[in-house]
Amino acid sequence: MKKETVRYSIRLSAELNEAMEKICARRRNLTKKGIIEAALKEYLFPEGQDKRELEFSRFMDRIERRMKADERYLEIVGETLSLYVRVWLTNTKELPEEQQELARKLGGKRYKKFLEILGKNLQGNRTIFEELPGEVYCTKDSFFSAEGGESTRDEGVS
Image 1 (tube, helix red, strand yellow):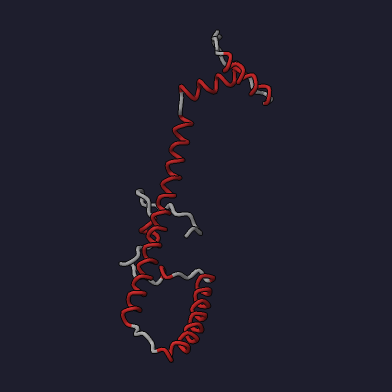
Image 2: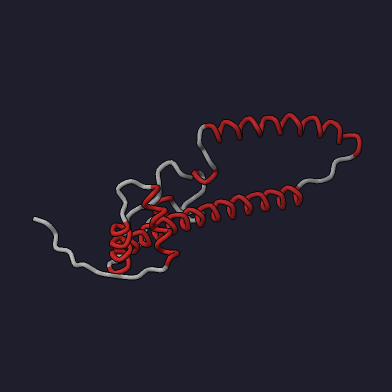
């Protein structure tokens, strides 16, 4: 059984007609009627557009949550570094001139050891955030939980 169709007679601007003819010439099985029907369906029944907007909105919400998490990570790292520097400068006395060369050599060795430990931690995916107490740093589940109570965080993304 065929769909019932209604015949319309319309006039289009030469610009629109030319654009439709170019598209139809480039694509097989595409007709002017098909283009006009698709445009009218989209205009009269914008469900597809609403769905795309909803999907885009959800995508942007996920990005926003990730950015907030990254912002929190950076805040913790910045505070940790500033606290360390403040404590170090407060409690470390300046060395006399004759001890400074030895201190530089020992400092270089200690710095290399620090880099080795840092490298191992990064390769093993261990971070300082895993060592922080929950009062200071919230858990992944509590930070990334959606309003509906389900976690929307993608696996494998830090």
